Image (cartoon, rainbow, N blue to C red; front, side):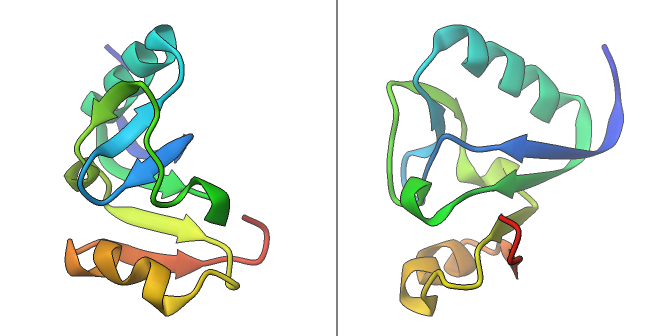
Length: 94
């Protein structure tokens, strides 16, 4: 197993109740392994992927340490994620 201090995880679907999910089973396995081998996990999420769910669950949202998204994403859309304790970072390059 490879151990990492930080995993930058591209997220296909993120929902505050469902968690991190993807449309492909193999991708779910890989992302689970990446999360398991990392001390901290950064979820990189565009606005259209927030509040969505895909068929294959990767992990609970609590697996994320940080959530990076675009500065245009509203505070209202991010409120559920903040309530779960995620540190939100808005970046213009997301």
